[in-house]
Length: 415
Ligand code: CAO
Image (cartoon, rainbow, N blue to C red):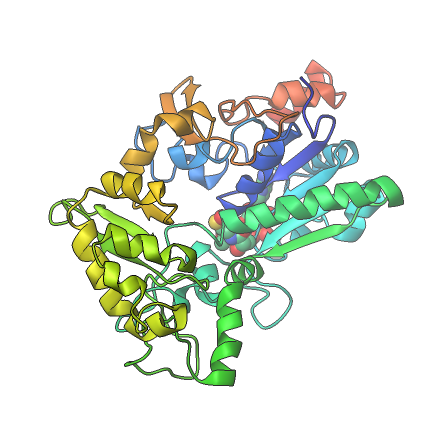
């Protein structure tokens, strides 16, 4: 079966997490992704957080599936020429170097345009133009600067970063969308363009409900679904909301049976208005279904803490899975707090390809996430990540280099 991005060739100049997330997605959709790495070293994540000596780390393997790896020293004049040939043959260059690194290498936007006016140059940077544009940025810096940290955690504690890699993987996702959009526009204009996804912007995009709340707070001085209401204090900025839901249906995380010893014996419980009467029945508080103090969402808002405490008295008598089963029968929205162990072992996620097992020549079998986006006409087959420089000869031959030229470039340290 053909793939959605068949025929699209990507010069993948990315490293660490944000850029590789983007190019891995494009590879999963069928693009030919050629990862350019420094000879002898490669992407730094190959050796970071290793669990097996001298074997590519899971950090690397889980971000670089379905790609080919070629080594080029792009600071060597002959290596630079190889990169120029690649630029002429590819549709998209994706990079997430520190600001200015590509220019310093001699590959300015103007130079790339000279070489290939159809080329799309896509970049992840920490910040867009402005006071921080020259900064190097990692995940948690973006979470802090994009508004996630100041709005995550509990009111009486410090800002907290989330385990979801919204700065890195989130921005990679944004960039991938920018790239396919630019490819689509190119079908009409015939021209390439620059695509920029700044990590601060990507995080803020994912935190937009908090910018919504900032304006609500400024207008009304309060937010009734926040845990600070009615007894706490609101300041000038959106406060940390604990586990309150970001939407109009109040929710909270509640203990389930076994919470004393199992750190994940919890459930997220949403008191959705249309099922309020059913919630009252399930927890044995039938009288709340008609009591004027509880019957409307507005009446419930100042009492949320007590309401959740009462619901928790019920959830603590059930395991999270028993609670799920009962609540789902009544269409009461809820979600078990799943540990990574439980997710890794979940058969339905294996069945859909959301979690896959991959074989690797030096690592053996390992688990990874598959493509979370399922296209009915372009199914994803997850293939192992390449070894460093595994495809150098293959790609060089496709670019028109003879075995003698390849060997000479290798001797000169260019590839
Ligand atoms: N051959 C020769 N040199 C190469 C090369 C190759 N194949 N590939 C890269 N290089 C060189 C670059 O030319 C650059 O050299 P100069 O600094 O002399 O110009 C250097 O390697 C790249 O370095 P860097 O500054 O990008 O890398 P770093 O480890 O110091 O910083 C990071 C890493 C992530 C902080 C930085 O790249 C960055 O801020 N990127 C943008 C934001 C981003 O993507 N952050 C997410 C990181 S986690 O996903």
